[in-house]
Length: 415
Image 1 (tube, one colour):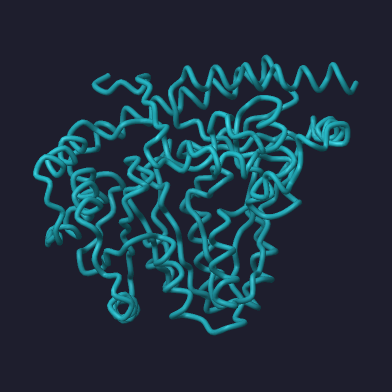
Image 2 (cartoon, rainbow, N blue to C red):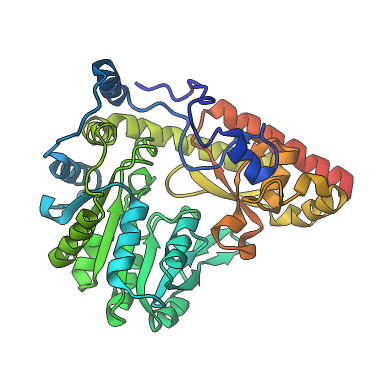
């Protein structure tokens, strides 16, 4: 392999929120816990991209950027990566996927209009709905406790469409790791069209699929459903701190309304560093990404097999994309509750207000910090934590050892 993903990088003291002690404490109560939470990876960017950053630093002037090739660069990437023909006039560049989704919600709905959000969900989707005083229509994924798999509940979707104006969809789905088939997406669009629903689809993890990804824009165009797709280089190339996103439209009138709103808010321009890294990543990051995906899949296999062998009471729901996956801890939940009753000081919610029962357990008993399942949709998901395995394999091995020790402690103490 050309790139060494096993090389560790000390991120402490670099303004990294993932490694920030206060942020970690807010999730699990233990500021010294090792981070496996927020969705950025512990891998340096491709050497070609890093060189662009070094060139900027050495030049040491950070003025206004001008790069009129951005949309074409992205279209070339999508053609090569996903075999989809996107034209530059379908593309709008903006400062982030979340701000783009919020603007689209603002443009397409009024206060108290219904917006469907599949659960479990990346929590900011819910915050967008609430912040803009729209009505949240929760669409829980089906979860099979025996097979530990998620799937779409089509009957519930049909019911919710009767009350909604918009669906905020996520493909691949975060945090379940689902990658949807073309048949799934066609069906999604057909139902939306019947009910005059606009789909806003976050495809920020699309480039990290372990199998072919179908962009929603294509089935939407095929069935005549109104849809907008949001993508970004942030997760793909591990440049999440550089706010840069791409919004794709089939409808030119809607695209112009979107751009006009960006101009009204003076947020049309991305920064010099973000633009430089994004363009460089799309132009020269394909080899790095290819090797990264091999490494991530081996990490996921390690987690799955080690837990099956060493800690069968915890199930890793192996994702079909990206570097984050859910751990189903339902088999130990009652033991964790007993531990919390015996040691309330370790599970004090005032110390870790952003966490939950399981994130506190992993933080206190395993010295690992993960996102608690409740962050993705409330108590219905309290049996889960989301684990970020986008890190060096030695870190995964150490984390798995600590998880085993923590679960062994529970079983020895409370059974």
